[in-house]
Image (tube, rainbow, N blue to C red; front, side, top):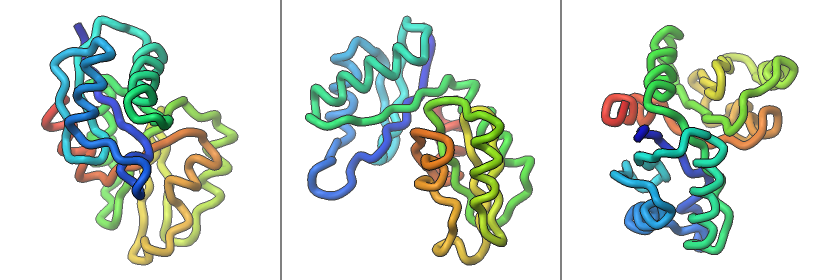
Length: 174
């Protein structure tokens, strides 16, 4: 058995994409995963599985979520070790401003990373490591060009969490 952490994209937005924590747990368990737990109601779920392929885990969860909710829920899975590494990498940046992490479904190409970094405005930096994009924003973060939408435009399916959530999950589940 291995423990994984899944990050669900675009749930609990508006009236039609509701997915309460208890329903997430039930859907994950129904899909055959065990020792399921969630953290806050933004689509963070930990579980154990005998599956080894990340793609198979994501596909099984996405199928279960769509069957339960009636809408697609893109799901991005990391191992405990990968999550801890993302949190630790953040410390190396020494950034004191707003720090968000976009978690990617697939590893981006060098050309895609270059295009993302070119999209930044002054005071914004995108640091890409594997399937994590650290968005380091300045005081004008509310006007930032580096957003999860920008990440998705250049790098593909992603979901975003603030660094505090990433650290908390790494400490709690890593």
